[in-house]
Length: 629
Image 1 (cartoon, rainbow, N blue to C red):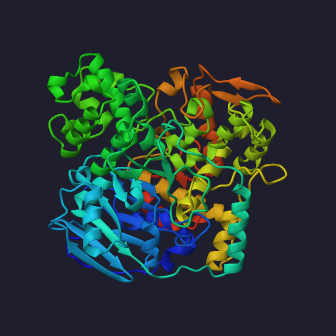
Image 2 (spheres, one colour):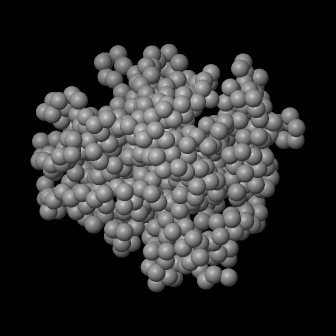
Image 3 (cartoon, rainbow, N blue to C red):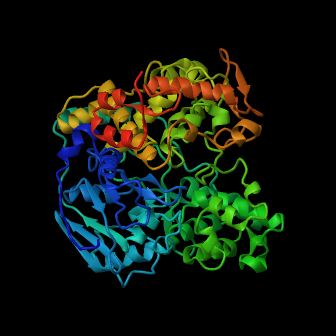
């Protein structure tokens, strides 16, 4: 950006050891971003990356990742985001596996990529526009077939939790919209006409059909919690198998059309219903306002809970803030709040730093009002929380963000709940659930949430598998295929991913070999985070409330049910984590990772075994490698 130069490097220098996606992005980041570089330093890298599956139909593999150092956390850490839609496919079809942005442009620019040609163009005319407006303007100028990812007004003003928005309203979080804005990069427009072909098309087609057969007969419907009266239209990502996830769009009465799914669809539903006394379109408009300004709805959700508590305690008044705090749930409230944050206007300048930092600045007891609804990274906490699942405590502790794609792997519990509640067509019984645990998480104990047994191995397997899937890149709603109505034991098949990669690239790899690459990528990310301040055992921690505040609610399991012995169903209501047992769980986990148990630091032997010997010298220089026993 600083010099206006464009260079290319060969993917094959990275692909064999790191596949693509987050794997390659992590390697580039390690090589090029020193820990002293801040999120908004020009020398930070913003990396857009696809995987080897991008552009292929029938496997849901055209998702893409954004990676870079983010200001979402304190201190700034390497972070990542996973997006869908069709932007990633077009980057691949244009001839590229990744785009690496460094430096800072003197004035607003956008990048145009078309079939091997890359230009840096003036974006002054779209600076100050929303994400949707920027996309529309570029499509008018370049043609409707162009695919655009843009940051919004929040990103331009480096709001800590600023997002990006691409075609089909694919959104990316982790504060990387602010990194994009800090580089004066408003948008990246891509158009590709290349055809992506597997090396072994017959084998690929057979595997894609097999994966589709395993999923047949089970769909997720629409986003749970959304107004059932809304006329939602399915809108799948490029190359999706279809029929499983609840990705949808909605057309409002005023003609506005946009994506409406997951957290962005539900974060304002109950608030609006309580305010208006009935269901209406306001939650959809709230979602679109956040998308257009470019702010993370998960972060907004917890911020609104905190603002409500502060207002009730008299810490804030409507006059002080200029925000109609008594009208939370109204369209006026969300419009005012998002505008102030996006423009960093008045109190919005403080809120733009994130809920936790804002509470520290406000003082007056505001920090004490952050309880068990918020994680240490500012996300909504009551999703697959550690008090319910135990193993997810290790997942939360070791990631710079809420690890949704890892948490999704525990999603088979929701299918088991259908059996508990005797819903028509339910097929994942307690016995099937335990069989899934054994095949995918290492033991039957992994899915018994009343015991600490098997949880360390489950966490390791989930992390390694997630690093693979976010490098291929496969949709985390659809992979791994944990269960199936169409197998004799209703257990899915974790070997499909390795077979698909073999068919696509022509380089044969088995399930264990693929997980070995996942282990390498996870260890590289661990080294990156260690270099930036997350240094071993003392930093592998979760929020204190997990040990002190009894569990009352989980978003996906409101009655807090867990399999017991046989067909017994038990409730974990009131559960807390046992601090000593959790520390022993970390001991077991570090042992499985072959790290130093006392410190949680990686060892030279393990890093060299994983082909990461090139990073050891720097880690040793910083005191971040443990002595081998």
